[in-house]
Image (tube, rainbow, N blue to C red; front, side, top):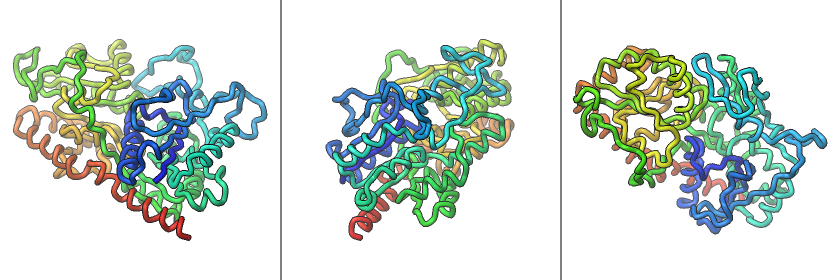
Length: 449
């Protein structure tokens, strides 16, 4: 089976949960359909500097990266204007939250206004058409996977025969119109200005929509009928589980050793997250409302990912007490995520807003770490048998952490539940089974008609 993906995301770099999910999904489709690299291609529309070299060692398939014209418009009706493309207009800008100040990129000051939210029209780059039509002619895909609703306009570039004989699948990732509304309610900018009607119309133009979790499938289904919806979450990539980073030293914890400051076993509470508004707001609030009250106990805190930039800014501002700061370790961006999970006993996800599957929640369980989560960030994850504890208020978080400190046996039992759940429910063959079955069935129906 021949696969073609259209995306503006350089997911091969695995910069954050969305990239990791795209990579895992793409690898699973190549294995399970099957579609070896020779029969797989990626039509990449993102930053050309992020494109992999021609002989990239990763078995992604052929990378088709059309050159970006020097002068172009992001809108098909904008004449000869030189507006930068979508990825360039938003990458350098980080939104501010009430509790945090983003690290200011070059050229961005506290008075710099946010760029207006992008629209679906901003992705209709006229120079793409000829390149995508050529890719369809050369690669002759059976299945085209469109990453995000922003790529759905590419369907209109297919010939009637290609539209009929090819299965067009969109990977939604989020209910983006709902996410935008949540951000607007908090007076926070969102990268895409999209209404419910616009999202439903774009998704309904495809042959199959991938929802990332059950709740979103239920939201999509009545709005885009008769277009079918299938759920495919995330199967974390565990290939780097045995990777070793000599620059990372595992601190003492309940899992290994004692608390260096007190000479007693300590629980290491961790969070691996990217620097965006939902993460910054949630983690900074959590440190203030929960962690400050735990500094007298044998508890330490370990953070990783680009979120560490924002945390360091708040530390420098003196937002938290010195006793708490002395117990916070920020690893920053890391090459192998397994290195982070080796260093923590339990993972938190206090995020309260946003749509889509919380990748960090699934990832924690896959690495055998119990998860303490807000009701929102737990999503559809079961709690009883998966090592997940729902915490709805600061007192709930403190009680859950204190219970694990006082009972290493409880930590071991919760870790075992997480591992068992991962083995049974987070394997690629399980996570993507329904999607693969739907692709086979719907492609056969299209090509036989």
